[in-house]
Length: 212
Image (cartoon, rainbow, N blue to C red; front, side, top):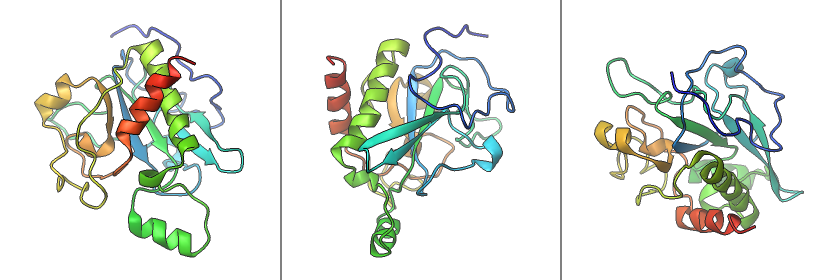
């Protein structure tokens, strides 16, 4: 089993929803970050942690920042990806998973907007929200050597569901991937999150954060 190296807790992240004591994970050396969206407006329960990622970012629009919650160590496998028997590994393949509270679905966005429900629509996320994610990616790059690069295709939901946008990796490509991707890129999974996030802008902000 690989040794865990580098800091295992993201600075400032709350451990109010810590699930590692309840669910054993596999020790890894992370070289991939997978981004999800929760499709909700608040911190999920994740079925008591049974489907939890490593971290969740909860937007605080009034303060213009993200509040981070950590559920598992960085180099411990979490539980938010589907993993089929006999296929490639997903949750346990050197992956740190981060859920972004909000939606990537334009219909959900329109419904919440019409109802006056505050939320982040991640394909049109405000700069402060993208910056919060970018700083996390920059930290993962510095402390865990996750490359600041990723897939070229980030199709909008619902085209991103399944593989309608042609974005999902093959098993072989996934096994060799290092960098940042979305749930919609992971094989054996059908979900289309985080949709058409501005990935180029996110990486540009992450690289700028390295100079802070």
